[in-house]
Image (cartoon, rainbow, N blue to C red):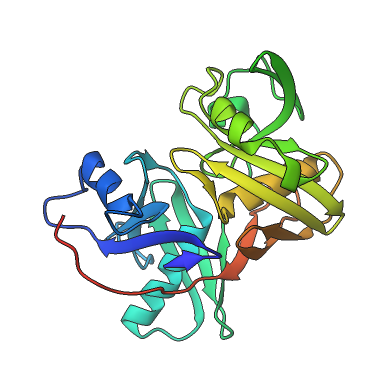
Length: 268
C-alpha cells in the first residue's frame, strides 16, 4: 500500500513473531526484494474497542514508534478486509491509540495525538524546551524546531525545498549525538499561512515521497512559531496532505489518500 508514494507492506504477524531485521532489510530492497519504506505488521487487538494493533519497522529493520501515512493505510486496509463501511475506528500501536476516519471519497484521517515539544519526549538533549535550537552540523550551524508526534522530528525552515541540502543535512541531523535514538528530519518552505512545501529525510529510510508524521511535525513547529493557520495544505514530492491542529493540548489530524498497489505472497 502507499500514501502519496510513501509505501508499505501490510501483513499479519506470523506465528513466530516479528520478522528478523535482516529479513526486513532484504524484503525492503527495491531491486531484489519487494521494496518499501516501512513494514506494517498487524496483530489482534490488545485493547477493547480497537480494530487492530500494529507495529512499524523501517527499511533498515529497526522498529519505530509511529507512522502517519502507515496508520491511514492500515485503517483503509482493516475496513476493506472486514467489510466495514466508511466511518470511524480506533487503531492501537506501540505509539498509543490512533483514532481514524475513513471517508466515502477514499481519503483517510488519523488523529496523531498531541504534539509534544518537551526535549525528553523525542528524546533530544537540551537544557530546556525552546522554539528554536542551534545545532552544530558539518562544521556549521543550523536552527531546528524539535517535536514528537509519537516519534522524533527535527524541522528546518528553508527558503525553497527544491534547493534544500537534504542529502547532506538529512543523515547528519538524523544521526546527531543530541538525538540518542536518531530523528526524522523535515525541510519546510512556508508558502502562505495555510500552505507549506515539505521534504522529509526519514530515520532509517532516507528521503521518502511523503511522510505523515513529518507533515504534522512541520505544521506543529510552524504553528508554534506563529507562521501558520490551524488548517494547512502540505505539498510533498508524492502529493498533497492536509493537517489540522487547533493548538497546544489538542490532537493533530492528518488527512490524505491511502491506496492498495498490489497483493501477493512471499516466503521470508
